[in-house]
Length: 488
Image 1: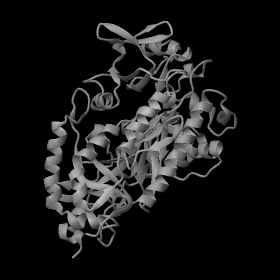
Image 2: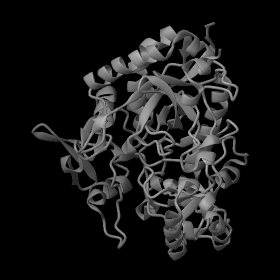
Image 3: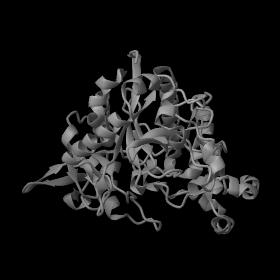
């Protein structure tokens, strides 16, 4: 009897009675082959740990995370849920993913630097000018003389595994991707399972060093010991305030809100105790980050940051204006950016998509809306997304009306049934859909990819939106070291 049979094959097989069941049934199973045998290192994992062991681990992981106050959400925060069954990625596969992530972020950072200076990619017609004109997160002030280079120092692309088992990029996430400290919390919570599993995942120790280095590297010229402020919306407002607080503790950063800041000419100051202190670097972790309003006037944040930035007195991570790379229409051109800037073929492909502001692409996509995923260009966290194969007729008619009324505000992507992974649900292992949020950190000298990243899973059977803000949970992701397993 195989392990899959011992836990009940039906429990790990998607139901065929749900809407869109054929679509979901095409998903790649991370843990088991179609014949029910554990894949690769999962044989070692499941040979040593059975469902009752994982169920016991679920409880002590929950207690440990609660003890440490690991939560997600703003005014209505909820416990951060970590499933004990880790996602395993073999080293050879990870090396390919890592190379693809580095290549992709290099190209995106070249695009950001070019976009706010020469605009070569626009002149060449590789990215249409209209896409930038309509991009909600383009920051014109960063094109002014004296503005620092625009860079996404921390990127958190969302990866999905396709039915053939290969990875592709669903979104790029350059503004302020959250999850790094949640990844560290997940690793610490499940660490007792590592010894019991007989597996040796790569350590995550270098991630904080790489992030601290990238932030220090962003300091103004000549500043070697910068005073750094992590800018947050604050407790009860920011959904990731736990992360902001933890990064402040782990990296010795001052965590502040805009109300704690004041500008004195070209110098930004932060209130500390009864006095004030000059700020050299801002690590932006706020939701409303625009510097300039649509009418060209400065926002409250812009009043604080624009003059110090243009005067060369302030560095910023991630740069203002980097969010233009998160525009979903811009995302459809990233493979072309890799070719244009690097002269290379993409190692890690994008999920194929349509820029619906292009009449030719719109004409191709409209007859297929029921087969595609429809996304608003400027929303995040799964907001406004419609998965065509899972949608009702009424939902599709409504979506078609929105797209036809303003196609430039939408994109469409080919659907990818997110891969499934064994997950503890009510004391048994069940299939739940997952994605992967890796972290790519760019400093002056090197680009670092945190090994594995944060695997996110949907709580409900068949659900394909895995964001923590929508109730999803997380798994630790183990990238195995060389010879990183023993026999069951």
